[in-house]
Every structure is written in structure tokens, then in C-alpha cells.
Image 1 (cartoon, rainbow, N blue to C red):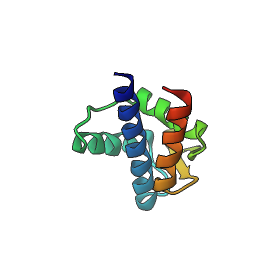
Image 2 (cartoon, rainbow, N blue to C red):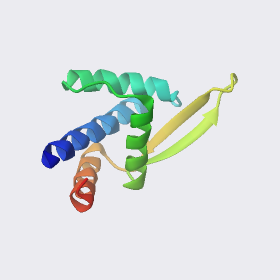
Image 3 (cartoon, rainbow, N blue to C red):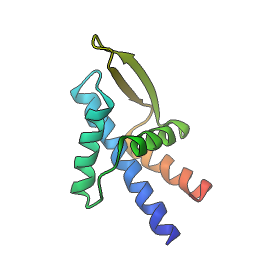
Length: 107
């Protein structure tokens, strides 16, 4: 059971990295809701359930803790929050870092 949770988390974090990578090629800045929409679309394709903005933020914090991403925030003209997540490594390296993190933490 624990291995299934680790595997699911590994997949979800990997999908989030790929979503950020894709968003960075399409937009210079974006709202968290845009990332959430694209992330949920990719989760559905993988046969996983949708997630919420709160859970996605927790996953983003994990990626920041592992030093896979750096977060940048700014406000737009309407006082909405825009963000940019800089990937500090390639998607392949990110998968390796996620694996190492999950094995070390045994989450």
C-alpha cells in the first residue's frame, strides 16, 4: 500500500514538472489556475483523478524543497497573481531527483 502511494506521488510530481515545462514554453507568466487546468488535463490522460489548487500548491512546495523549481510571483493590473516556475533541471533529472527524495523520505 505504501509503495502505491509513493508511486502515485512520484507520477503526480512528474506530471507537474512536465506541465510546468510546457507552460513555460507557451507563456512568460500565468495564473495558478492555468497551471491547475493543464495539470488536471494531464492527470486525466494518465487515468488519475483531478486535484485542487491547494494540493497542487503542496506539490509545488515539494518540488521547491527538492530544488527542482524556483517560484516567482507578481501581480497583474487587476491585482491578480501571476506566477512563473523556473525549472532548475531537465525533466529527466527532475524524475531522478523526485525518486531520490521519495526513497530518502519514504513518503
